[in-house]
Image (cartoon, rainbow, N blue to C red; front, side, top):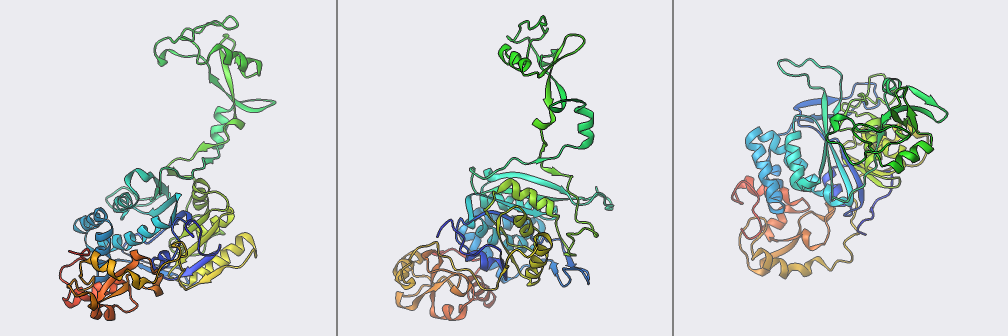
Length: 468
């Protein structure tokens, strides 16, 4: 059913997140946080003896035929996105093009599974953040960009012949303009409280705030009246009735010179609104209790802040690159439902261990290596009934070799195989000639296109739209 997850709370999948995302119901997730590889051209591995020992990945990307086939899929679905990726390839090389293709096909699915009120946070670093920003603008729409959040991940760094790089970037986008947002505050700095909230009465600590205007505020306003013998030269900031009410409530303080001030209590201002530069959450130190040894582990406090701001208790949180499970632990801590996906089966082990450490034996983690089956499309007719419609739409052209065939020589095929989470919906169907259908088998369409390109059967370097 659309808007309802087709999986249970506390589910962790092991497998390719593209296949799994394709099987998740549309508009069923409130918040997605992802911390994917950064195209950093580095190898990562957890130290022996750590909780994450065995976790390793190579963050290096090379362009291959499957990438080009995916690029063709993007060309058909979103020409603007196709152009951005092509431009990045020209400017930055094949590695960046390959990386962005990998990210684009997954981000398109992530946008689909987000609820209309949902948000997505993409954690990256300066290696690819400029390209990812344009990618996200194309997928979500530039007006849905909310923030580029800077997180200081280290306090110092000595980089040769450049400013020391000490930050990561988190790109914050929403599905629509009507999105969940909870105002989040950080505690006041103790030194700030000591310096500015210097006074105290039975109601607590307070500071003195101006209630009259000063010369720097411009021309004298209409609020020029005398109160208790005091007539400010530049007028009052509030109408007389409000000044009288403040005085009646004991909120006015008169200085020795007869000048009035308003009491502003610390309890009325419990914190500072969170800014888009995060310096108060340090990286996970080597001795921290939450440390797993996972090569790119992020602090729990950072994920808790994101989850508090962009979701509510009971909402579904998804991390499609869940790694050492920080987002999942944070979601559990904040009383959200959650699911994660990772290529490594080690993620399931880390989820279990970390949730036990933080919450005790609270319940069973659902470990899956199968694909979810969408149930939000309603009752679908037999997929073969779309054959005539598809023939007209494709103008008799096989969607593999791009050769025209008579109606009898074309067969209905699932673009994303049913074994990979594909549905019988018309949008997932195409016509292939017998040879292409046999060659494709149970593989995704991009694998067939890659083979046809390599064999010279399909002309051109990119996938062409139906009918071209």
